[in-house]
Length: 88
Image (cartoon, one colour):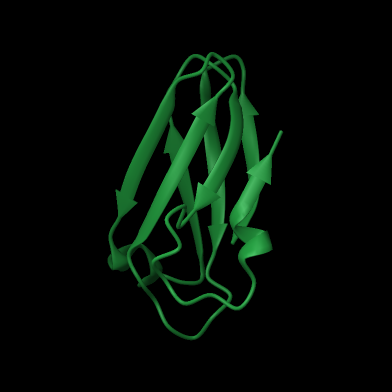
C-alpha cells in the first residue's frame, strides 16, 4: 500500500512511504508520475521488506509527484488494489 508522500521543497526531493499489509513479501514495481509529465518505473527487490512492514523510498527529482502506483500491471496477488494508488 502507498501510505503517504511527503515533499521536501527546499531540498527538491520526495519521500514515498510504502506499507506491506500482508504476511508475505514480494518484489514490487512502482510507477511514479510527476507534474511535469515525467514517468518513472522502479523495480524494488523483496529485500526492502526484511527490516519491517514500512519502507521509505526517497526520490530526487525537481518536479512534484502527481501519483504513485504499486504493481501497475497487476502481477501480484492483492486483496485490496485501491490502496496501491496515491494521487496528489
